[in-house]
Image (tube, rainbow, N blue to C red):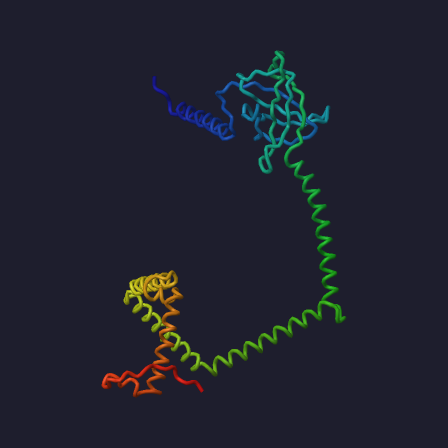
Length: 310
């Protein structure tokens, strides 16, 4: 059977309409092939839109289908659809809540623990939860009050400071600022003076720095020479010599050796002293009686006699 051109055109138009409806509902988040049940609830005011979602324990299970004002009751009736797999009691509560600062509102199904299941078309009871924005509005109100009091205190402080600044008395802040200004001027003059001294003695300062550099180099050279002179061995040799001297002095103190005995033995000292006196007497006798000591050449012995004392 041959299909006419008009029939083909009609079929294409119908398919286009169907695809348009399917696409439009898909963009709205609706699936025409999904089986859904419609339920109702009423609120004292409208805070929802057809883009609002239905949640159970934070999970999206449906969508708002229709919002209408009931002229008889003066309330806003909403129709929402949920998946037909969701079973809940007709005593459950539909709660209107705020999803966030900028996220709008949604409704949540607060399940009731009984087996009296809701049927499509039932009108469920509702409640409104105090949302985040409402709580924040109260907090901002209190914050505004505190901020207002703080600003008033700050304004009072600034006024008092202004009075201190414009105070013409000597005890006011004006005198302190004047003294600070004078101090800064004095420091400025001192800086100019130091700058002048540095400028006038620029050559001398350069010479001093050059001399210091030369001295530093010489000290560095001396340090290198001392390092190369094996100062450690010299110090060790000196230490050995001092040890030997210390040992010698210790032996003398103990009376060891000839020098030690001479220093410590009193008998030897007295003998030397007696011998010294006898030698002195002999020398005096030789001076007084030189002929007496010529007996080597003479056969006559001349007896010894004590020298006469005046």
